[in-house]
Amino acid sequence: MITLRILIVLLGATLAVSAISLPGSPRSRRVLHERRDAPPHGWTLHRRADPDTVLPLSIALRQSNMHNLDDYLQDIADPESPNYGQWWTPARVVETFRPSAHTLDTVRTWLAEEDIASDRVQMSKDGGYLRANVTVTEAERLLATEYYVYQHEDGSEDVGCHHGYHLPAHVVEHVDLVMPTVQFETVRLHGYSKQRKRRAVAQAQARDAHAKAAGYMKRPNGVAPKKATQIWMDVEHCDQLATIDCFRALYNFYPNLTETKKNTIGVVELGDQLLNLGDLKMFLEKFNPNAAENVPKFIGIDTDTNAGNLTTATDPNFISEGDLDFELVIGLLGAEQEVQLYEVGSGGSVNFFLDGIDGSFCTFEGGDDPNIDGVIPNEDCGTAPPANVFSVSFTGGEDLPPFYMQRECQEFGKLTMTGITFLFASGDDGVASNGDNLCLADNGTAVPGPGNFLPNFPSTCPYVTAVGATQVDPGKSVHDPESAPTAFGSGGGFSNVFPRAHFQHRQVAQYLHQLGDAVDPRLFNRTGRAIPDVSANGFPTAAVIDANYTIVGGSSAATPIWAAVVVAINDARLAHGKGPIYSHLFADAFHDVTNGTNPGCGTDGFPAMPGWDPVTGLGTPNFPVLLKRFLALK
Ligand SMILES: *[C@@H]1O[C@H](CO)[C@@H](O)[C@H](O)[C@H]1NC(C)=O
Ligand SMILES: *[C@@H]1O[C@H](CO)[C@@H](O)[C@H](O)[C@H]1NC(C)=O
Ligand SMILES: *[C@@H]1O[C@H](CO)[C@@H](O)[C@H](O)[C@H]1NC(C)=O
Ligand SMILES: *[C@@H]1O[C@H](CO)[C@@H](O)[C@H](O)[C@H]1NC(C)=O
Ligand SMILES: *[C@@H]1O[C@H](CO)[C@@H](O)[C@H](O)[C@H]1NC(C)=O
Ligand SMILES: *[C@@H]1O[C@H](CO)[C@@H](O)[C@H](O)[C@H]1NC(C)=O
Ligand SMILES: *[C@@H]1O[C@H](CO)[C@@H](O)[C@H](O)[C@H]1NC(C)=O
Image (cartoon, rainbow, N blue to C red):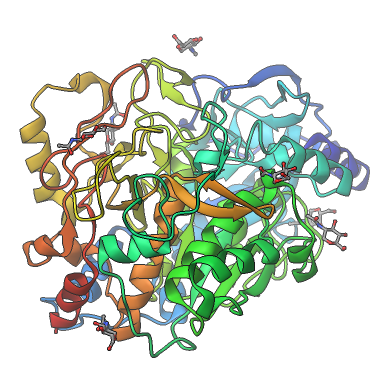
């Protein structure tokens, strides 16, 4: 989706196009491809779109072999397979999934028949997208729809057709989705003017982008972060202040890293969330003095922030997530480990990040898909080298259009084929959506609760590792079993979009059997991909923010902790996918968390239980055993 500001700019350039006459070509039968029952929460339909407005129409072509993705992954991630651990090259991934010539021909021919001349149509590098600038009149005819301007509560406007759009019956199987139509992702924060961006950043607290920082300190309904009144330096008070030493003691995490330059970790900050290097240093000097000089390498993606900002930013609204993430990662991994900061600007789209690390995903050479990502001069496209492990403490409700989420998730799957591990926070609002506490009405619309459970995306994408949070119970020690946190609900549940991953089938079926009907079965989708996969301590986390010792928390804290564990395993040997961790061989590699619930949507949420559960996943890491189990795989 794009902003009106951009539309007006485009308008002048392409008025001539709108004069094109209606085609006389025969039309094949149209079928509804996508619709939304209602505009997303906070948006209302405002008026019909101007017929001459120009839309940068983007058609995501059906990719080849996508139905084989799980088999390909299994082939390289299943220890029983002869190809175990043999990651694909990016080029092989692109060639394998490139849309077929037949698909390309069918869609091109359809466009030509509708008088969208072929010289107006561009194709992305990996052949995945076709794009053309068309007027609203042309788009309405092409898609048998009506375009509207929508207004957000905050006054910003977007254009789309939430009632749905139609494709010819013979085209439908060749197209995943067309944009801008029913997507309302992130664009509200886009439109790349400094002024708009400043406003966007200012709004980020109240109405974050699609992916919200999964941090206790950012919960609109949560308790504010509080100053730590006493800084415990022992591991006897981890119920009151969870420090680096607490995590080491809890998970027996004393790695001796040797591949610290080859084996990289990227921490992703979306929406211009920053890190303050002074805070990082102050934290490390206190909790891991050896690592105090370790400074992350700055990699900017679509941002006007630069490495210099890392010494000046002090607003807790913008540094809390970044400070926490790096304090934990470097605090745990020490002086030598190379750590990269992927600073993603312009409002917080996960797609920006994907564009930055995977040039083949960009719609144009050196450019991108402006209707999703806004129009950005000199957009980064494949300019950021990917790391082996990515920690992303941002997630948001799974209430985007399903085709849109599926396409983005496929992209994670393709990158996973090349050996990259993505860890995403599972959220901090229990069974409701992260940050805004929405649930699903019976008609499928996201509404303030109560309602059906609404898990978070991208954590529900089966190709990423979803990380939930735990706590040491009040009065208990690091030697006692942890529980689900009580200060907030650890995000978890069942996807309504992605089916249950094959590798988790046995464990999840066992949980559902134990659960019986203790949770109303109408509230969640038992066939869906189940999250989280794993968990780690997420409260009450010690952090330095704006030069103060602060207590924060969330699956935001748990995710970088798990990322550090994965890095330490990779250091010894690449941890080949997460499928194996669900096998019985790994049963003793986790501390099972069996106590607590994750309330939300007017319910207590799910109960934690022995084995996997939708509150804490398989449990927290028992590092030495986890390492041993991975090394034992051939
Ligand atoms: C869906 O249900 C919600 C809650 O009951 C209601 O507010 C909304 O108007 C409904 N939307 C449609 C399109 O029926
Ligand atoms: C659409 O118009 C924009 C702005 O004029 C231009 O930068 C872009 O290249 C055009 N895209 C296509 C596919 O022609
Ligand atoms: C790292 O080295 C220390 C000291 O030799 C040892 O105690 C510890 O067990 C080692 N860690 C691992 C994971 O092997
Ligand atoms: C980063 O610093 C640059 C140059 O000082 C400034 O123009 C920009 O606005 C800063 N960005 C942020 C997000 O503070
Ligand atoms: C339940 O999840 C499956 C995916 O596993 C999906 O196909 C189905 O539409 C979902 N059902 C509902 C009611 O959301
Ligand atoms: C940090 O402490 C200073 C001085 O006490 C205070 O002004 C500031 O608001 C504090 N920041 C946070 C995030 O608590
Ligand atoms: C279970 O968790 C609660 C907090 O939710 C805690 O008070 C209680 O001690 C825990 N019980 C056990 C057996 O760990």
